[in-house]
Length: 389
Ligand SMILES: Cc1ncc(COP(=O)(O)O)c(C=O)c1O
Image (cartoon, rainbow, N blue to C red; front, side, top):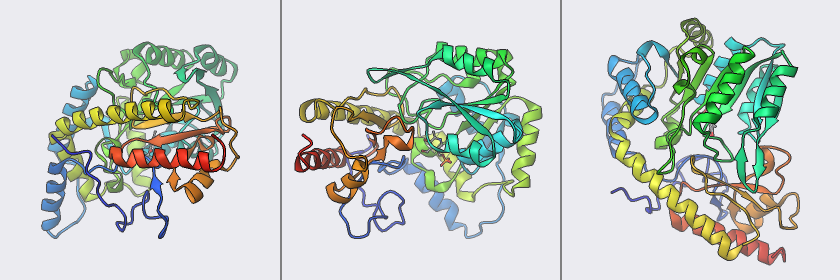
């Protein structure tokens, strides 16, 4: 049994989430990392590696690839080989590489909204125009709009690539097998590449299954690049380790060449160590972590029902991010900033994922329950103090 209730002090560790407020007392429920200690064997492996004292250039040895092959088989039921894996320093880095090799500067890229901002900003940074399709929101149940999706590809042959985010940040939507098959079938029909960001793919609530884009029909796979990482799963974001999976050898060669060209032919030495140990020893930790997150989601849902019944949310099937609608309230436009400055709780504003979600917040639930409770108490107190409720 792991103790996810343990409150670990992160202040004073140059922590993005906790160390930006100076002396102010602010509960951060925003950026997507966890307030939990990682798998004990990962820490042990890093300490052991660090004790060696030499940190020269390092390569991925056979053992690391076989851990990745075995992990994706166990958790996602997909078969890959060592030649299908390219280690990179982050998923957004992988996205940048994939877009660089799959598209030209005049091409367009399709993204499903609302969206984790880098999935929109990275193509734009590369001068690829972003075309948007949206989920249908039925009372906080998000569904893919296949009709609009196909129309976008049919009407605009300049769209060369679709960026999928599965499970989806910020809605927590876990795409069903049928949805994935349908999206990939449409992309195949119009000759459009799929980059599937599956960084949240291991954070699956008990009773649900993740369907990877690489788990679809053989004929679709030539056009698919999947971005994976142990970083969200095992709270290793500061170590900067992720990997690209691609079964198309030509595309893999282009990705490798592009990675070398930007000077990242290998990754951080501790990235290899952490990834290998997490994938070898982390299954039980992950299972308990997902169970704890689900309990936090339920806590949040009940808390809102009792204290803020007009707020709307839907327990996600995946991720540790809750997407909460405060549409029913008369809120100032800068309410998220004011909640932080005056109320002492920091959420991600919905508007940063899509300008149509002005009165939404994304709540990071990968934190001890006591912390989540305190953050929610502060939200309610601020709304009361401002006569909003
Ligand atoms: C969907 C998604 N992709 C990518 C990332 C960032 O990944 P990395 O830090 O490996 O670039 C995040 C982080 O929140 C995310 O939610």
